[in-house]
Length: 411
Image 1 (cartoon, rainbow, N blue to C red):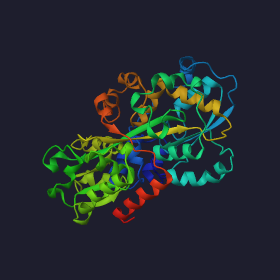
Image 2: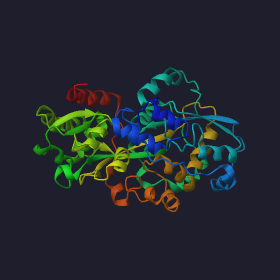
Image 3: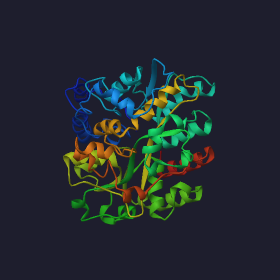
Image 4: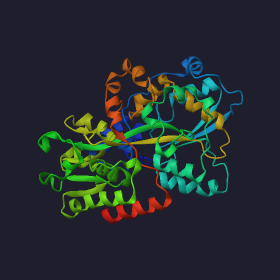
């Protein structure tokens, strides 16, 4: 996720409720590929109202997620990425409205995380000083969430307050390298990094990252500026597990890519601005995020997303309670509430990323079978088994990996 606030007429129409999120992305993202950096297309999904539900069902929802904590604070703050929760009109979020009614609290919902690094920069001094950053949940991508854990900036979760999380978190999200004991993070939404391509332009099906090096595709291939995604996919194609990789493995992956860059096989390294070129046919195959392909397929059903035979990368944006947060009880209650499959389905009907919650697909089938049956939103068990996560890098490894990658990309 990495996105800015849209200000063009299409986006303003969306804010007024005249357009759905799908409309916004199709008009602005596919047409120009420049609405956001590495995230708005990659991060978002369908449109329509999130569920059409109101707070009227809150009592039942509250009952389904356990006992309301006696010490719930009257208000609390939740920081997330823009356009990353069910939305009606300009400011309404039905799932949060249900939560507030059920738990007699008021949620201050902020869409102020537009980039992992820049957000961290905003709150780093407070975290270092042991101060409350005035947020009770923040949503951070794997590597940044792991960084907060290493630095001691995350509160340990009270598992007894999270029965729904314990019961409904899918196995693919358990015991990840960034949080092996599942002590600090609760997954929010996920996505896959694989290959996006048009089989009509490639002359048939692709199966591997190595297919990107086909000389017939020279100048019509792009890779990603995200180091973990690009090196991770190439490592998998070389039989290297990104969850246990070394600096030498990173060097080997860079050495695999470099000739393709120097020969012009690789057109460029991109954020999700590859979407426009892929849609227009300027690029025939590229490293891609599953969320982008979901959106692009609305206008171009010929496009496909490939989980290579060697495996694809799985990334996750995670809910985390910052150290010394004022209202951790409310944060726990929301995490547990969200992990009710019915609530998760309401969010998923709007967001369209990979849902980490057991039962959400079944809850969505009657309401929106197109979403429920989309393997890029609800991957099969076989696909999930072929997804991999990148290791949690030490500060020294992070420096070395990034230097190798920057030398490759010219960044």
